[in-house]
Length: 83
Image (cartoon, rainbow, N blue to C red; front, top):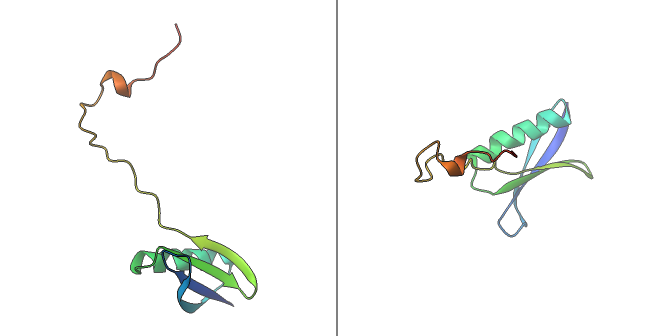
């Protein structure tokens, strides 16, 4: 197992906290950081393996609202095809 450091970043991009996690692979470390991001108040987490930045975990983008106020199947929803 490898020890990874998770740095919890504030809105300004500055480190607000840190946690050491153990993981078998970089992918597993990033997955663990994603789980921590869901449970914390910080907007992002950087994952490091010593001096190597493994990656940055950000919240998943929000899906657009399905209820835009228009009826489904209106002309705005349909694709225009060339004649």
